[in-house]
Image (tube, rainbow, N blue to C red; front, side, top):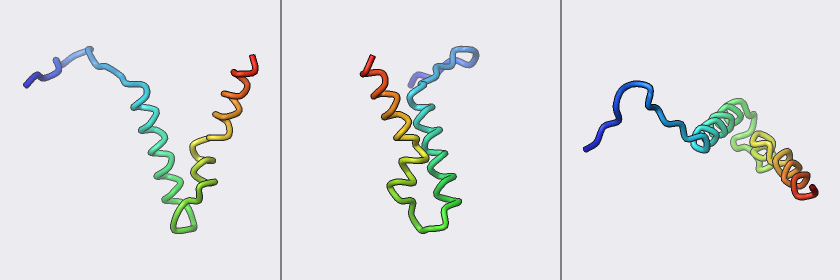
Length: 62
């Protein structure tokens, strides 16, 4: 078994960190929601789906 050395050799996986952040935001939204489940619209709002789609659309127009 290989063990990572101790020290300043940490590797950051930016995609994994972004996914963890989004999961955290969903957990917070779910814990504060009045209903039993978040609607698909609520999930899209938390994940900022509309903003991402608009950014993709703008990028493809250029």
